[in-house]
Image (tube, rainbow, N blue to C red; front, side, top):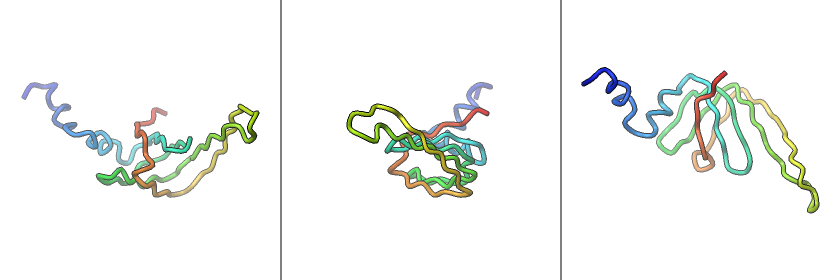
Length: 95
């Protein structure tokens, strides 16, 4: 193998990128206008995630029919289990 092929071998399947993010801070986009930022502790092949030190951001778009304002609600949790069917995107978070 050539020198550059070593990193390619480490990432041969899409979930290998998630594996490389274990114990790192990640950004997770969820269905329903929700986002999570926290430390990835575990995952499985269904993208079920366990995240620690989580900051959840919920975007609420227009409480009333005429209102197009976007409100954000932030919550923090020590540990969170995220069901994989709600996950849209997982990305390493730059600090």
